Image (tube, rainbow, N blue to C red; front, top):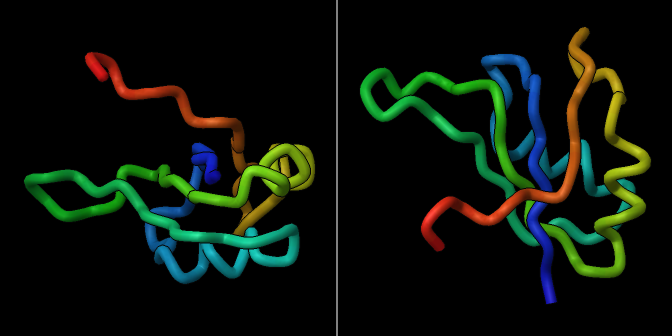
Length: 84
């Protein structure tokens, strides 16, 4: 089973690979994605990391409030999309 974590306040230039590398020391990262603006293709400053069920709590504790490239990250369990 996997859980999805929301990662906010990311630097605009962050790539999905960097997000994976950032969370990998704390457990298995299944996938990561950066959310982009549909019209411009630019990062919207947040993304999602899909992780193993066992590691999710540890990752939130370790990464919420952590600094990444001069920015303080917001990390918590993602909420389901509206209408789903």
